[in-house]
Length: 138
Ligand code: ATP
Image 1 (cartoon, rainbow, N blue to C red):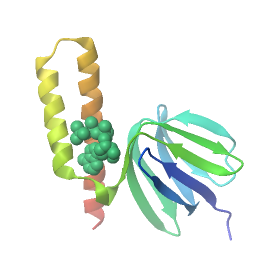
Image 2: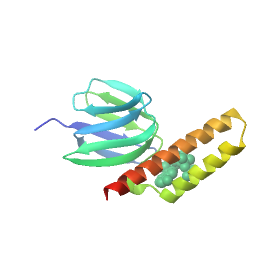
Image 3: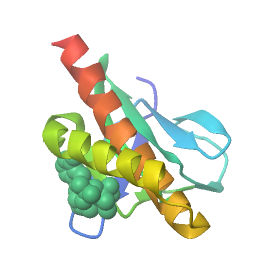
Image 4: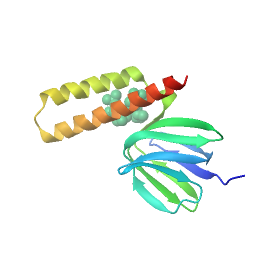
């Protein structure tokens, strides 16, 4: 049997996942990266994106909103400020967050506020994307 990758996902409010998996695809600042058992040690910053966990022919999707991933001899650790499984996403809340951010972007001039609104918009789009991905699979 192929060796499995030990994965832990930790958010400020919970130990979201702990288990052995076949593969993890994460969204880093330089694009999507797939990690298998035995990957060389690395630390990388995560972008806002969909995390795809593959195990025994099944997939689990989560929205991961930044943070970082470390791979070492013990496995893979993801630490993030916010993450939700696809079935936990409140689609209405994400739509409202998207509308708020878009309205701000139409009205503000200040650079810091523009950046904040762009980031909020990006988080909302990831959440809506994953909501669509998982409803496509139903
Ligand atoms: P909002 O403006 O709706 O709070 P946000 O992007 O500012 O959205 P975050 O700061 O990323 O929210 O997350 C704060 C907390 O709320 C985290 O625990 C996150 O998992 C949760 N959360 C945010 N949006 C949603 C959502 N649409 N569905 C489920 N949980 C969410």
